[in-house]
Length: 386
Ligand SMILES: NC(=O)c1ccc[n+]([C@@H]2O[C@H](COP(=O)([O-])OP(=O)(O)OC[C@H]3O[C@@H](n4cnc5c(N)ncnc54)[C@H](OP(=O)(O)O)[C@@H]3O)[C@@H](O)[C@H]2O)c1
Image 1 (cartoon, rainbow, N blue to C red):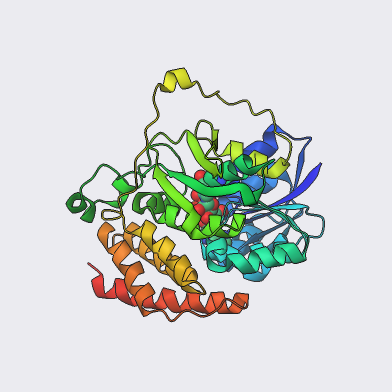
Image 2: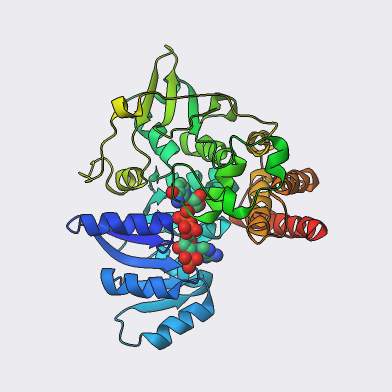
């Protein structure tokens, strides 16, 4: 039985992970859970999964939980130190990293440094400090299994093949909720409209990232570090149906892809139980019912964020961290109704233009760039605020 910790257990990936734990009680034992501020849901999860230790990053939420549940036989920690302690719980073998945003960097790195294998959904830390995370993983004998459906597809399509035979990686993108809109229409879409993803049910931040194509920009950076392939050999193609989750082209021009209905439980369970495949009781993909699959090139004019992802990698150093931080601030401002959809890419672009990148020699350097870019992006949001 594998002892696991879930960072971000109250989110979309976190609850899907617990669904797998519930379906396979003989396979997994939950020793630790963390959330941001949702103490209500965390309490339910504690009662159902009986972890030894939990943490909430929000101190007041942790205090509320302690006050309300003196009967719970669980250690309740708070703040970033609490998250780090759960991430490095001595009995854990695998940490599912599913916090949203850069807030996951320090706890995920702590898990790596304490020798836990990682099922990585939280892509932003890889964007902020991918090389550092991979170096630390190697140093500590840790494997990082991708959870993102595209990276899981590439991971599966690489199995049994030599990386030196790879010609390019091709990430597929659904195009998100707004793919069919004109540039003018995109300017003024509401958060409600942008949150209507056609294929996937996910947290709010990644759903907006899908609509701007920033999600694909972040995924290009993630793929660069997960698979050690330069950005010049990573392509993106729009595939509206989200059936082909990504592809690898080899030197002999053959392509290997992974297909399936869009359900995150497939890549999550593969990362959790690699190399075994758990018998998930989910609907099968019937290609005769799907009938046809469509593909087209990304539109960089209407969706400039994808290009920013490539550019951040070409510039290197702390530039991806600055881009990621600016995106987090801009997406939050858009969700709060403070800026327009079209402002998101402008804020990221202006933040990147103003950033002086440095080598990411340590996590502190990445965090410094993150803080700098957040405050720069906040001032840009302020200037635009409606
Ligand atoms: N959802 C998907 O299908 C999907 C697919 C591929 C990759 N991913 C990636 O997986 C990650 C999680 O996505 P999601 O959609 O599951 O997000 P989500 O539904 O918004 O959940 C985020 C989780 O992180 C916690 N959290 C938020 N802010 C935090 C903070 N400052 N400190 C500690 N914990 C915090 C939340 O706790 P509270 O509930 O208390 O706020 C929640 O448990 C993202 O990096 C995303 O890009 C997601």
